[in-house]
Amino acid sequence: MRQTERSKGRIVAVCSAPEKGMIKRDIKEGVLVKDMGLDGDAHAGFMHRQVSLIAMEDIMTMMEKLPGLVPGSFAENLTTEGIDLGCVEIGDRLKVGEALIEVSQIGKECHSHCEVFKKTGECIMPKKGIFARVIEGGKVRAGDGIEFVQ
Image 1 (cartoon, rainbow, N blue to C red):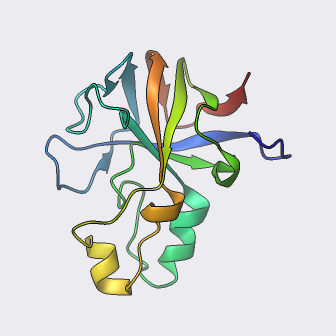
Image 2: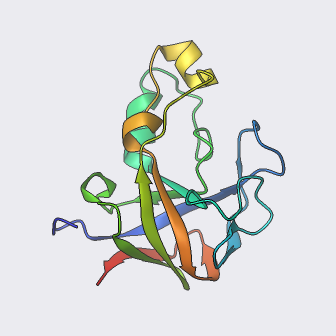
Image 3: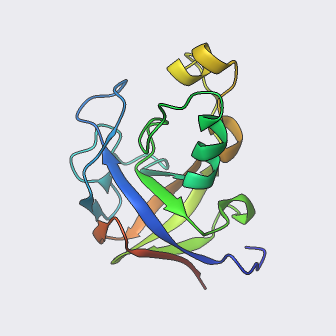
């Protein structure tokens, strides 16, 4: 991690969907399960992309083109605010609520051209989406802190 003054922030939303392909909705709180992801979310599993994060600041940029966007519109599990996700590197660890996650991937190709791409001609997930593995499980709630740890 490149140290910045924005190395701490908060969780704005905890989002989940019971099936893949659905827009996730803000469930306000959930449990991150070690080596799995967000309990009850369709994307939870043993792969390296167990939890996804995106910054509210990036969603707000896209809202200029598509005002109806909300946390979960990009199928992210955790919507953050205040922390600079643009400086994360693979292997960085973040304390999120009671849980500890480790960044495993930065960005994801928008294969099926999501609804946002169809309407605006661009998607932020290829550059702004952050994926992580759950190292230590625990509860996470909207309002909880998120910060880089050594």
